[in-house]
Length: 351
Image (cartoon, rainbow, N blue to C red; front, side, top):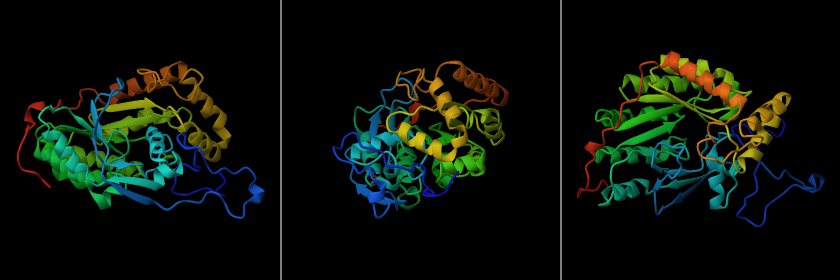
């Protein structure tokens, strides 16, 4: 891979167009520019007072009915992240803007408490986060996720968390408290054990060894934890499935999940550019195998099929995952939530 003009520490290497904007900057005559159109951007923070935090999820592909995201955009910079497209609603790019322009919902905890105090609210697990990582780097400063966990612990409300950041161990005290009443499940995302691939694919995330240590720390603290091997990308990490599941199980994971890669919206352009720059020798192989998962396209929007894929390669991936899970996770499972602990109503506020 040539490092010329490659933005280290970033996943996306381009700014894609925004479907909601009429105008955009383009490089049509490079010889006419005195300086590069794109540079490695510094992270910018935009603080906002959101009007709503908890959102109902209508997708039949997902287990949880509700999700909440204290941050919009994510510095982790994962190439494949489906949340990239949502940044366009804010007038930003799904490419470099998504990982460098971070929107912080400073009133997230207040909004959650208002939701739980609503007389019609019934306890149902809320996913934290369903879109961007709730333990991304800015969490170290803003601590919005910790504030949300405090609210959930106060009202004994169930929550599910998914992250690829070891910062979650900071909140072991709250997670242990919730776990004592069967009110929390945690999934640690583990995509690859190849550090060169991880640094290129997920540039600002915790290393694979650190994520395995995080699984172990949660398990030792009796916090139910599983592993999410997602996305599986044929030609890049699909062969790692047995090793990924074994490593997670050896460190205490109780269950494992997976999805195959799908490149919806602007992500297709971002991923194609990244793949050509990082793996030019196997671009055609990987790209065509991704297309084979989705009937000749790199994306599939049909519920029930879009995250599983279809066809010969998808069948191989699922069979490999099934056998690996049977071997390493036999007799293990996440505990069921106890929805009876929810304290409905109340008069005292945390804020």
